[in-house]
Image: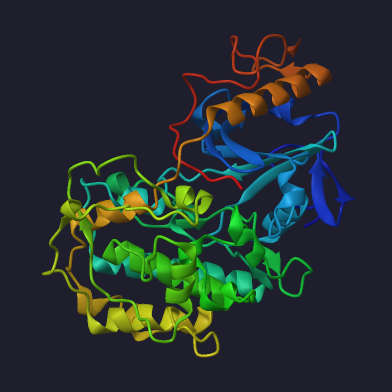
Length: 439
């Protein structure tokens, strides 16, 4: 990146900051340039909020989001696989691909807060959209998604970068397929990404005991459990994602982490390629998400009571489809194809012709979406973060440029919008909100 790059805000200068190219806005601080709206995603050390430019004051720039990274978070010290906020930003700024989330501008303020303005896809998370009962999803739709995902991964790997956290929650749709019928994806969340040969391209299996830091258990390739990483770990994770999309289950499942590791690493186990569906009744008890499983990895859980399973034995995919997914899930990384080779498989090249017109059952899609459902945000954590951001704003007494060009000081709480002031808050002009992840 360089100063010649066109950014949402005018007049930034480029400086070196811990090895990353960070855009500073000088006197034009972030809060003088953007209105920040509702919370749409949260993670260990950041949150994502809707945002739009003060100069528009409406939906003209509504398709934007801001990732707010707290560099003082102890997570950066505790998480073995986390690359750090500035390194993540540096990676994002260097990427230019139609299927990878785009950066519009970056502000690094007070050596603590990093504000990353991103494009904002409106279609939501992949499997949440696919589980919409208003849609009829045929297997060739998965071909479209698979081709784009592999192209994005091939671009990353050619750029000497591995994502290391490929999963449905990190794949968004550019538009709502209910409205457009289009399935264009955007890969997001590079909080665990790493460059090949980098020092944090390192084993982090010891993180499994508490919070998993280098991926999500069901998406971890066999070599990851042995502390080995490479670009083909992303290909494995893509295979798990695609299997879950079409079969409503993980290719390898166990409720205890040791058993899960054994199932994934054993040369004797194979994906069953049998669809599992969930009835339209609500599951008994609280919905146990994958993230909740990560917090209690050694706890046995009866996730899906047997009486909630419905018969979908008549649903089968073609041998070509099974062969494609099976290649992605090859246990030996030496025989597993890279992203480029995987994208040339005959099932993709033939646009899934062997499965033309074959619908993925609604109840299979419902279970896929249920498994990939993101947990709700802890309100206490978010209240604390909001208070800290409020303190940041009050410390700086940011000068706000209104839509009429009048300069005003910010008074009042972060989440109020008074008239045409530019501030943290919500507004009737805010864009429709869809989920977006934060590391």
